[in-house]
Length: 381
Image (cartoon, helix red, strand yellow):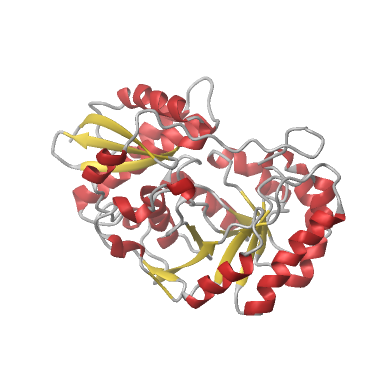
């Protein structure tokens, strides 16, 4: 079997789907992140994809090593391109052998996968109502953004607004709903210490990206001041970037993103390293159906995964829901905050390519919001 063709689709809101075809008619799907510069990712994917045309799609590790080990390596653009290609290769291999991908990675270690639901939280005042809705749908855990922009040193008024939102959730659902709180890298170390300490009384499930991962040396300082588990990892690429976190010992939960870190097998390696350091894993997956399906394959065979992010039902900027592009929608059916292991071959999803072609946009470019602090300085988003 040889790889014969590569095709990419840009789909609103921020999804890049890639399809690899083979000379035996088996096709594999992958997904890349457009937030890292849509046109650059697409152009780079076609350029790197040409290197694997005519290759045996079963040689996943060899192809990965060849694509990764360039003179200038790493970074989010290379990371998401290699991740998308790697997913598609695994999808082909699984379909060729008629088994889910996790069967190649040691087999299932669990019967089902716990998931949480995202409810926003940047600025809106209705997070309590959204949390209540998710609780009624059977979710036992949610995640919310902690705050809008924060300066290096900011007011307690903003700290209090975060506490008010979290307290409002506790008032309507008590402790029956676990709450993950995402700082999203918007908070600098001085205010992260203040905010983390103030949140302890509300027993968060974890605090995510309390500072940007580039400021990793701050994690230890913060972890020594609060008892809440700390999580990070969505912006990191390959096990080599995660290595410093493991050695430092301040992070409790790693969050590799299969559409960024290097793909399914690389995320599995990262989670295995975390397991050796007695760390949990909660993979990052707020994107489209292919990335989520790939992440469920990781979850199925990874014992230290304790919960999974997903974005079912979220329409970004009037965009499409991830179910709109999947024919076998039951694969993402959640019951009592759990999803069953995928059973189909490869990624286990049957993509609706006609629907993808219908809505694909050649000129689609995802642009992150431009936030500024009260004094006009650029704020983290």
